[in-house]
Image (cartoon, rainbow, N blue to C red; front, side, top):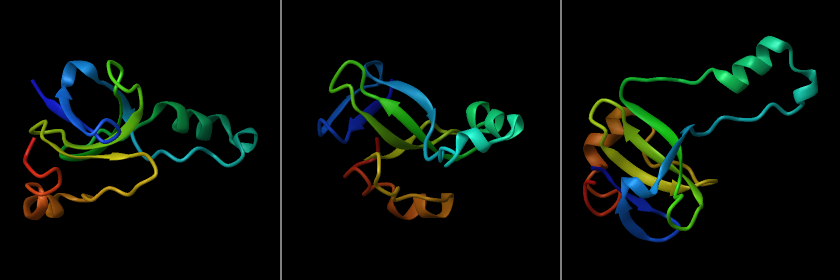
Amino acid sequence: MLHIFCPHCGELRSEEEFHASGQAHIPRPLDPGACTDEEWGDYMFFRDNPRGLHHELWDHVAGCRQYFNVTRDTVTYEILETYKIGTKPQFTDKADTAKTATTALGEKV
């Protein structure tokens, strides 16, 4: 079982309290009415599915009910950091993780 740190509650909680909501940092089209069907379809349905580092949107459904972002390794399921929406992730590529994974949350989770 994973334990996830909620940046809003400030607590490490069981994975069962959370719901993954997909890829994080997806910009909404500035003028949706001007999008072609293909562009709108890409925005609505196509997401990255990387092997390795991935930024995801999660919801603390059984707690504060707030959304936040998670940086997770999709190979090992290791959660490297959690952060509030609107802030930048500490980890942006796999090279960053080896150096600072143990300090992102004060411990490896």
